[in-house]
Image (tube, one colour):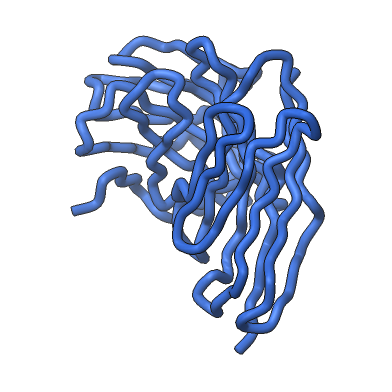
Length: 113
Length: 113
């Protein structure tokens, strides 16, 4: 079945550092790809998405580009803040009406001042 | 105004008991979900309803029974609770079928002793 693999955490960075969280996927079709973020004690929130190859999703300074050739959707941010500390989940949804979001295992990010 | 609200937020109970978690969304969405998040933060879909009709039923013990009295509500009833049921249960909703854009509640942490 479809699956998502994320880099193992936790990731600890200093404020203003560059962030990359790797995500690769396996899918039989042409999925849409997502990054969700979970702040402490809260539910997940959609951070950004891309629906086709070479699309770039962006939000709040975060970016990710849908790379079909490498089946990847890595999350990046140029300068992280303490408020970015959270767990980040990569996910995919198959096209064609599938209701299922398949999530990666999450990567915990801690940003220190 | 909370978009997706779950009750209770915390639930501590003994093995063998029966418990329910309620979920309501005021977003006007047609599709609702239950996800289970284990102690390692791994998220897995359990059920999905579209307009009160069950459309996803993953490999979940039949001790778990979802009920959708109307499209704004999706409740989860669990019979004969086991230690392994301890987890955070998230309710979510989406506007478009298969969009992958989910709105999550804050979660209900179930602890089975």
